[in-house]
Length: 85
Image (cartoon, rainbow, N blue to C red; front, side):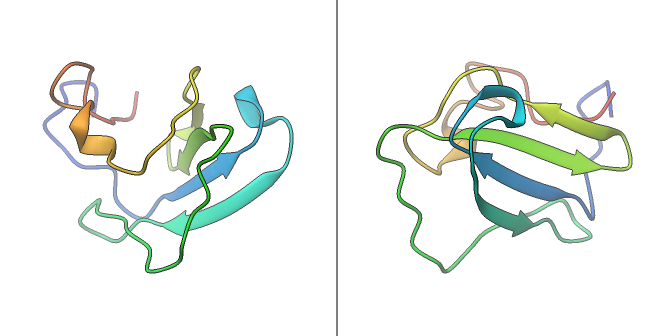
């Protein structure tokens, strides 16, 4: 939620090759009822990927590309946690 105290359950994370859902959707990762997500699949981050999360609050895009899958290395540390609005 906006207070960053409640998880974002039952959502979907998408990884695109372009910003704001442009380019090709390369990967889809489901978020569980506790707001956690992971994959056992190998993800190729070369060239950068642009995350988006879709759930009950609509779809939200990250404006910068990522080159690794450790979301919590920034979110909740140097940037806001992942939350709905």
